[in-house]
Length: 434
Image (cartoon, rainbow, N blue to C red):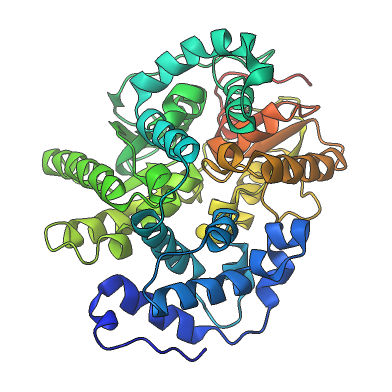
């Protein structure tokens, strides 16, 4: 793609990176074939190629976007399926991130939108605030019918968290730092388990299962809390995102100073994608760039750490058939599509893959709150494909996906992949109905 940025514009690191990305696009349109919003709406401007043209025009002319441009950019899930499909290596993720930050700086949203986005940014990344919000949620449901769609969606999702899923109980949290206890296994190293923000409140059982598995595999596990910045990053709130990243990096440096870390383990794939991109996100920050690159080099999804050292499965367990939902941030963002399925198979599960596995379930961070109508359509499509597998349980490696599918009324239990692996390898039954 030909670009016409001025030398002055290219002095900005973000614009310079965007220009290099734009020049890789060859207009082929392969991205449209895997784009969820294009599949639903059939509008070229709601495809990656269409959005690339809108971003190019906005940045080249150095102007604020129009309402129409904002609408099309807001409809993007950042699922990154287009990056898996693109034959030219267009890094759409970085381009969209830069565009969202530009929109946030130059476009004034309506009062309702500002309020909603501010609420999300100032509640979800803070566990204590989120717990208070969940406590108050039942009161809000009394007048639910009069609430706007976005808030109704938020209440719907809150039912899928640790406080609500029917027939399931959260596993008790284990201690924050314990040595590896793998039977007959040499110590494999010391790892930091990121407990993050919202997932620790909404799905603590995933953290407990992850820690048990890693310990049995022979790792020493230390927990590290704090938001990675992904939630506000995708809202275009760049300064807040960098602030969260800086605090998390300092926490990890403190752990490293005590004893070397072999990996930073993440079991929420959206957070994992963010951490692995720290080196790029903070490249222009002279104070943080080197440490950010160090964190990115250590970041691993839990399945990567367990690859080759999964604890022995417990003999005699009657294991259910699993439909594996591959979270977008895992299969497209981290290119880890086959590994989780393989680990489930090694643990003794029969694993089935749904049709249209490349399409997003509609969760996408806060997308299911900000774009509830489109998110609902994608969820219904995903649940239909998952149901068609005939599986007895659905597994996914991202908390947002499990909450989204539970809230949609999935006919079978929806659990984190690591809960099933933990159970098959000696952990407690995740209390799924078989």
